Image (cartoon, rainbow, N blue to C red; front, side):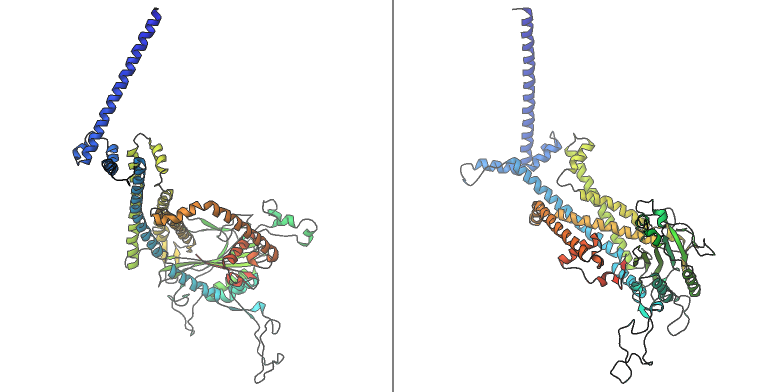
Length: 622
């Protein structure tokens, strides 16, 4: 045999011997491990706790304990084999999965109980912080004081029977005699806030109702009021500072024609320009005090003798940069001097302070109710639409003067509940961290990032819980900012007014922060509802509904598409038929909402939702 062949055979023999040796060692190790596991399992079943601690990995010990019942059932099945025909074989894998599922449900049910307790305390805290019922009562009383009151409008009065339809009768006669001189006929029309449809109506409302209603210096019997009772409406609500007029103005169409939304100049092109040489576009999103669309006119304006009498100014609304500045044309009015206020108002009216360039006009002030310990920020504002429509609005925001008064039992109780909510949140975060650490112990071979990805893919993991716990961090920060606001440290209190370090005090910005705080809590409450629906799946009976909806989601989607298509068709029909006559069908969004309300049996009289005598109004309580 050649030397090369002998070498090859010898090498193959050596390799085979090495491979056989490796297999033998592997089999020996497997037998040793199997014997060790079997001995440990038998020791566990027999109650030997010492064997449970020595030589057996922690993960394997937990799996052995979980399989104890399965092992006993299997041994019992073998012992009774052939004796009982009703017995059947079982699958250990399925049994393990079933045990795992029941264990997860049991754990989620126990966690769900603490979660529901957390939600109960959280809801109680929100209700006490909001104080919605008393706040709505105070806000509505102020709105009724200015909105529901009527005044005789002198500029709109005409003699009967041109204006009125009532019959004037002579004494002792049953036949109407309109021509008799002794027939008493009113010469003016009674109007209110919702009846303001022109700029003339606005000036009348300010002169006849607002100024007289804001300044209260005399009692009903004619006696003068004391310093502590001046401007106290209905002996309950009192403004802390004078009010402020503020407006935003729009550049004419000759300037805005280069803007994306500047269309009025192009609409009046050609021969129409001779009839309408000047036009104005409309600034959007001005109701909150900041016009973010179109070109704002910041140039000074005034009278013929004083063309720069009124200038564009900024107003500092708070302590630091966290409080934004307000910009516009405004006029401050005193808190108690009614004669000066009337003089200011006559001057503004004489100077045509509200003219064709005015896009938005607002009156804002803050009222305090000491009985309820509440601040109420009021905003009366009018939008001057380029269609000629004058749209009045009212917005009120209510919040407490002091959030923590240790002499008040309700404040003390709320503080205790807030502490419980914080501790419950910490407990929920602890549960989440504990679950992740346990998952890491079960899978030590995974890296941190891989373990986190696998952990979030588990059925027991809820992304809603993670988002909710994170939002609570933002809520806690916002609440701390509201309670420990440095702006409050410089508020000075006098018998007739309050100010902020010598400057006028307006609390609209703080009211906006508080409104944002409760809006975010509304989002968290919605997440609570979704989490409760998830926890309902733990109970097999409660889970039937969610599972049924999950199985029907595609069929429900088909039905929703058909229903939406029909609603859209009826919406377009409503706009085409009477969109130019009924405000509820004047645009696509409002028409769709109105059609949906008709479908579900809602809706109401248009006069009840905002339209009065050709004008528009919206009253909101923030």
